[in-house]
Image 1 (tube, rainbow, N blue to C red):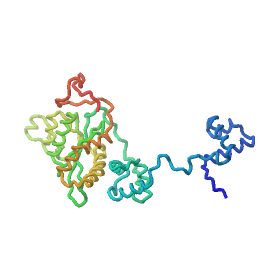
Image 2: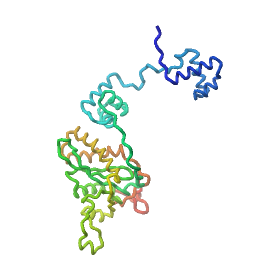
Image 3: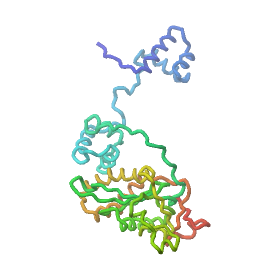
Image 4: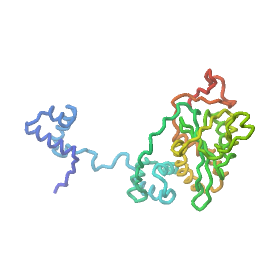
Length: 329
């Protein structure tokens, strides 16, 4: 007894049209038009149909293992390793971590395997809250700065704060962990940014008292015609950096979204490495972790870099006539 022949909808449609051709009710030119095929492709397919019947229409690879299929047992090893070490990791991050151990596979393949094994659930996509503001054209034109309070070392430990700077044009990030969102932490992070990238033109911040003050101006400020400033604001003024206060978290959405990335990836990386102290976490951030995020998420700016560069290693040949660093990020 012969086995059943499974045919797709497209193959069944070809069979019906070719039967019309065989009966003389259609020409092969008309069949090609009806099947949206070139004449040559239709002729080859019809020849296979005449020679082998319905089997000539079925793709020859059907029922055979793919040439790109993983080796036997690979899927079981991957799922076992995921459950053992990366439980709760999203498929994209888990695929990156598994690749470091030699288990190389696409994150979408891993997603399907995890869903099938019940180790991951589909997540509902949220509707867009509002249209996003266009990015600035130049690196350093606007940098968003904010602190993220989170239990970075696990739910059983106290909250600490990651101060995060994100360039608006490129998404390039720099981060520093501290116990609280303080003036000292903000200044330390800003100084690291200036040392590495130069002085940004403007900082987009929220209205926390570290950045913006609502106190009354002092007599000296009144005589000088200056608005009240925090210590951080005063330091920025001396560097020529404009502080722009945001009216909502959504307004500085780039740094807020980077907080979400860090709260996912950094928390998991700290747990994997057994890091529970802020100094050790900062060494991780400075020695490869943030560079890895930038390599994955940062993008080229539309225009050239334009900063008030104070770094001695920037040579005159790298600057334009107006003193800006013309090298692209």
